[in-house]
Image 1 (cartoon, rainbow, N blue to C red):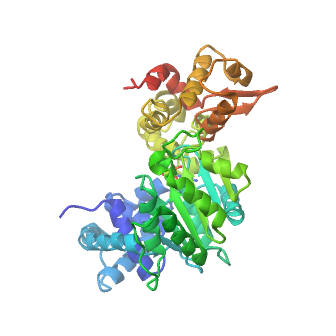
Image 2 (cartoon, protein in one colour):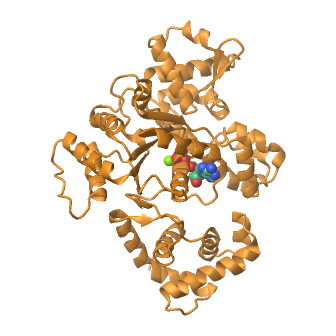
Image 3 (tube, rainbow, N blue to C red):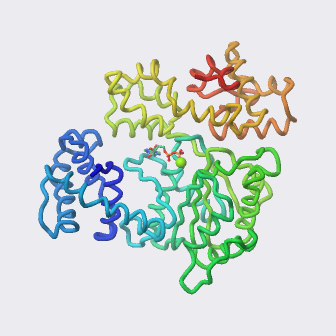
Length: 469
Ligand SMILES: Nc1ncnc2c1ncn2[C@@H]1O[C@H](COP(=O)(O)OP(=O)(O)O)[C@@H](O)[C@H]1O
Ligand SMILES: [Mg+2]
């Protein structure tokens, strides 16, 4: 029998726990599971995850084993040595069941007084979440006021994690605004009718007539909006960048294939009362910007990285050494949660905990960021000619020793577009951290994020022409 991964067994037990105990596995129990799965001593697993070893070895371990004994072994205890083998045998079927159920049904989320249902898909789990108090407050406020809220930020900054935390925090409200949440990642680029039919199935009650998937899209939209008017749903669409295939400066930023999304968004914004739409995107959403501009019920929120203080708590929690170099490190990666996470292991494994050495030798070659830059700026990516022009112009100036570059200097160049298009482009690039726009003493000045400077300056031309190794 092939072995399950730690993620799979955690998912299966989490699901079982929600059903049997009406709460997910605790963080401590997850650490115990990790120790069992990766054959670690409790002390080692506790240290890795910032828990007290005594708590993991006794309290959390007993809780998990008691739960497993009751739920899977008719009350008979299972000792630690046998636990992995036992779970491998007993959780594969559970995993299948949980996946099937997740696809068709809803799942109670957090152990609170007001269970909020999450349907459609599963938000990411964030075990050690730091900071973001202000952002969560802002997001909740915006969702109270507007029908559609779009969160835009670079890859790995923490958009999905923030939305996952939002769902948890909604469950703790004394008078929750939403009866349920739908989480849908559209990274695979479904057509609008496909998505609408999917959503309709989730929301339809047994007395509703079945939806005709072949009906005109406008009817499918009307049917969905009817459901949403009746049910107070928070609809979260993650990875919205997948449907932004058109020119962001044109009237159709979605492109031909996804043009109907524009109609859906507009109708949602104009016709909704109680339900809300939350969009998460690593690319700017010019359509939402336009709706905001025309004072429709929509708003945008740019998500930047963790602040120095938040990132310091994170690094401390992960027991990273060398605190005097933490601020430089956080500045360098602009508080990007994903890069911080990825760096932790290599700092310890290859640099004996020396953060400075990591910045110097290994921060440049991060394939994750290189890939996302290539995706956005490379010729095969979906960036516009003007976007590529701005980034490469600023990079060339920096190479010549002009950093930051004054806005007036850019305007004097022959750029491929009009000044208003240039302004929108600069705004967009800075929303996703591909450009740093600040107010200088007398005018706006532009630069590149430090990581990009370090990496791109030597290879910029190769990146823009597609010859990056
Ligand atoms: N506030 C936070 N504290 C700790 N880890 C975080 C935080 N925000 C995000 N992360 C982690 O950083 C990684 C990237 O976050 P994610 O939400 O997937 O980014 P995005 O959706 O913007 O691409 C994930 O592993 C996530 O768990
Ligand atoms: Mg995400």
